Image (tube, rainbow, N blue to C red; front, side, top):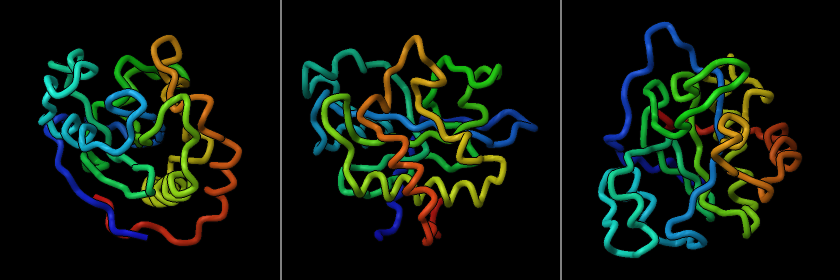
Amino acid sequence: MQPVRWLASPHFNHRPPGIGIDLIAVHAISLPPGEFGSAYIDDFFTGNLDTAADSCLADLQDVRVSAHFVIDRQGIITQFVACTDRAWHAGRSSWQGRDNCNDFAIGIELIGDETHPFTRLQYRECARLCRTLMQRFTNITKDRIVGHQDIAPDRKWDPGRQWDWTHFRRSLASIKHLIPDIQ
């Protein structure tokens, strides 16, 4: 279990006053599509993406997004935005009649796509991170960990059919060691 890596993203703001954190949104990302080993995601979330480096990145020229956390294929967790701040991960979204999920959700990106299965290490570390967040933000329950496709069903597919929710929930139930160094 490695410590959480910290890379500060400029793509965040403060949450609205009086809004509690009570949701986790799980996402999937790969840049370029189908590639998992590049630094493009770090660069994208920190505002340093060279969109001329690959033709697949051109559409991201003026896009400003972030997530609180990214979990790579080896299970390494990188934090980009403090949990108490509002990361820009959900976009136009709604959960149980509440719009603007960024206001009350923590975003976790998994490096992956719709074609390749997620790794055993990603399941373990996502469960460990979610269990840690559930301890810190007690209004987050296992039923309040959802996919991006659940909060933006007309726009988003992720984490998609490759994410095994049953396997994840079993992992979540068996976690014993939490992550001490998240912000």
